[in-house]
Length: 403
Image 1 (tube, rainbow, N blue to C red):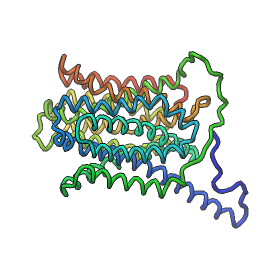
Image 2 (tube, rainbow, N blue to C red):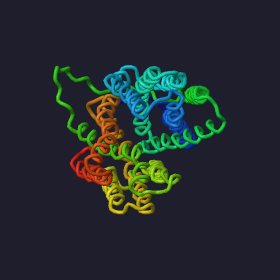
Image 3 (cartoon, one colour):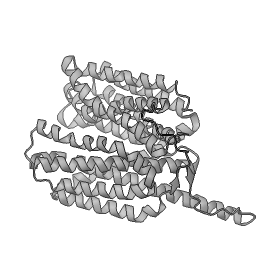
């Protein structure tokens, strides 16, 4: 790929050399800040929706089963868009697609707030998923480009900003509930914030064009082996992440048997460590290399889940979920960074391939846990998913692209 030259092609000399270097560094930081704000806006939208699910369920008088069925509309929208996101980003540029997609993502959020019955909620969630996937591919393409400008690993910090936005969205949601604001009003306020983020930062998105030579189109093309393996690693990581999102509270309630208010301790400890790991993960990767960090991360996922299974008590389980949070924190951002630099496949399309397989883990992990738990026990199902961490460490050692 070829990045735009944002400072100029002259070579600064003498007393102007330091001024040029400082100006270049300052503009690079402004680019990084702009890309971070798009990650923040996307995370804020998703967390805002999640914070209102119980209220929407009550307002529409939905049963647990009915709500579960309607919620499938969101991943269905994401899966639908996966077939087109990479090609759109490659054809039109992530700097053009990202502002459009994230504004439509915020607009779709407000439409969810207007839903007055089940089918309207399902339709709103479908388009929320469609534009969520398009935003995801374009925003991570920008993240890969920014990492190329800095010439060091910074992608994990972008995902850390997304996690930080998740906390912010949850806190804002609590505040909106305390003020008894209507769901649509809440969503509209968040959408306006996203509009402001886009307005102040879209000019600093990276304009880049792919210089990869197009390959001859074949009716059947063999999938790229390295991308498939990266996708499998992502599948294992996101399956582990998914069960933490959906089942950590249930585990603390049914297995650890903590009092009601403490049910959220496991989930909260996981989220805090995942966000923290993403902010300092880049330093570890730059110091020790991607391969070693990812291998250790895989072992941490397995160790944490097995620890929770062997010691089902509040303190050991809290520590165990913190270990799992650290383990999953850097894997997906690192995978995106590797896939985005593929030598023969455009960034957007490579990211789509890896994220598609990875996202299946996020979708299939939680239901798989439920079925295994029904056949045996929840502790056994957590132990089963625990194997995935060791699989990550094993597969990482076999991929030459990971250094």
